[in-house]
Picture 1 (tube, rainbow, N blue to C red):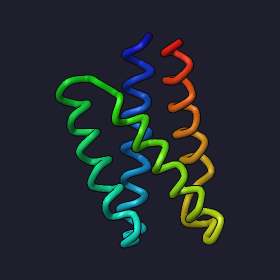
Picture 2 (cartoon, rainbow, N blue to C red):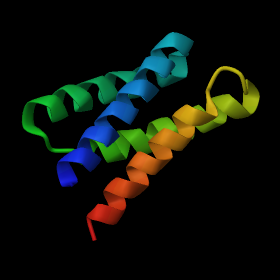
Picture 3 (spheres, helix red, strand yellow):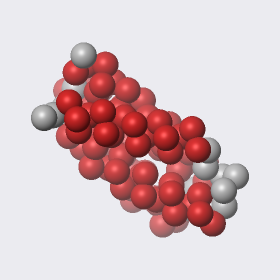
Picture 4 (cartoon, one colour):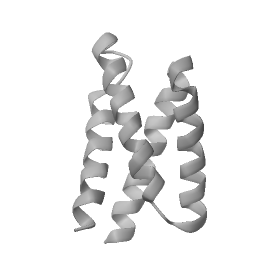
Length: 93
């Protein structure tokens, strides 16, 4: 069960990263680099701690972008990332 939750979190973070990369905004460059590193790190050691931290930051950034440009960020992407983060957090308790 925990593996499924962690893998879903990783996949949603990957989707968020790909969207941020497509948008190519300078203000998200550092976040993109950190997310890419965390995803690679998770793939190596299966420790999801960085994914929740930077996934949460990506969620805030994507919500901000969506407010200004609703068509650039899908609701599905935001909902998926929110659900993956909350499922991970719920599984921790």
